[in-house]
Length: 139
Image (cartoon, rainbow, N blue to C red; front, side, top):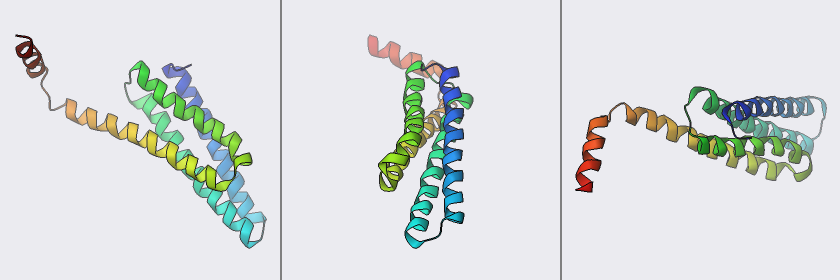
């Protein structure tokens, strides 16, 4: 359930569902007239755009980064939450949908930023210095 291939495939599903939600919101804005409805659909556009962005970050984490098994679990939970958010978005409401999308984006973006920082810091650390430090602390 949290293997690289499975999480990657579900992130593609999340991208598709987020794109579909974004399309529905754009079409609703264009074809349904009224002040209240237009504001609601614009909030939907923002929410689905954020969820689409989060899905793409999840996909990039699965394809471009070497993650440990527990890290795939973290990404997987968020991807599955995006899929569940697609279903709940129609029942929960727009404000909760916006809050959920912002939370999911921020957590996935935080994971990606941490991995990016680790990639840059690994290139400056020498493996022999790490071994010397651990050997000296044991004596």
